[in-house]
Amino acid sequence: MKKHNFSAGPCILPKEVLKKASEAVINFNNDNLSLIEISHRSKPFVDVIENARSLVLELLGLENKGYKALFLQGGASNQFLMTAYNLLNKKAAYLNTGTWSSKAIKEAKLFGELVEVASSKDKNFNYIPKNYTIPTDVDYFHCTSNNTIYGTQMKSFPETNVPLVCDMSSDIFSRQLDFSKFDLIYAGAQKNMGPAGTTLVVVKEVILGKVERIIPSMLNYQVFIDKESMFNTPPVFAVYTSMLTLEWLKDLGGIEFIEKVNQQKSALLYNEIDRNPLFNGNVAKEDRSHMNATFTLADEKLTEKFNTMWHEANINGLNGHRSVGGYRASMYNALPLYSVQALVDVMQELERTA
Ligand SMILES: *Cc1c(COP(=O)(O)O)cnc(C)c1O
Image (cartoon, rainbow, N blue to C red; front, side, top):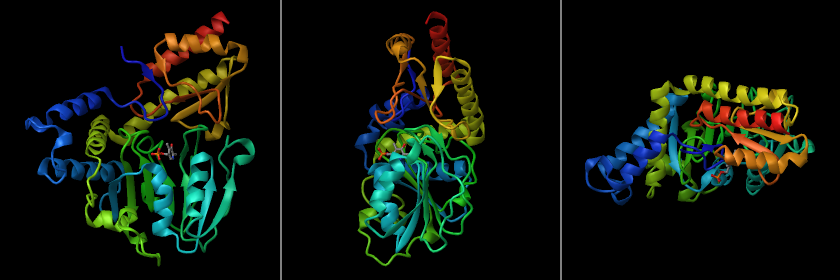
């Protein structure tokens, strides 16, 4: 039986997606060739990437609104650099909610003046700062919608007149938002969309072309827009598998449907964390992530026992990030409700036998 996979990333993908992707590696489209040995310029693959790009805009409700979807490489980490390279003329504002935001800030500083509007570093990023002011003279505001490591999630986004840039790596396609409020969204595929190897960028084209510097081709959004995401060889397997996941999500009923399932899953786990005296949640309740739930044992002496129990229950990937410790249950779109129930059962069993 497949393990209950709570891995934070790369993470669980739907079974049927893995099956189709593995079949395509052997024989794609019944053409007696592998997906990964045909030209990326051949019609079968061009169809794949076009379908993937239009599914992205459809699922996000961004069709015919001036947005382009791109499948790039270099991970979300490369977007820390690329967003600033393409958008930062003089000054940008950043919200610091953890390791990933901090890394984005570090890269952006190479290109101009940075205003850190607020930070939750004082409490090891266990909450989302609120009531900060975004200067009106900045080129854009950057935030991280879901903080994978700490388990916090932005439930609302600031109203601002400057372009809004967001790292949605670990919660894209997981909840309904007015995505048209964002001018640029990026997400490494391996958290909620596909395998590692590609990064989704959704950009409103009108915000481009405003910086004075010369941008190298491989880091230039406009170059990839003009070449329809195929300036160079795209990561064909990652794009194809992402397309399969997007189709899976659309067939289920899209973000509206999956958001309800995600709410059920996180409610089940957080209720147990709050009810069970052996466990403590790490973060401010109102900022709890529906994707990554972080928690600790009230009594560290139970660590070995709990670890043995969840391993025996066929659970994978529950250890917290090395910078936080404790436990982290990542409940991405493809994780079934029964996997969360399996974890809750173990937590209750620990309570009974401790
Ligand atoms: C994982 C993660 C990243 C880094 O992604 P890479 O694709 O490994 O570069 C950036 N931001 C967030 C929010 C993440 O969860």
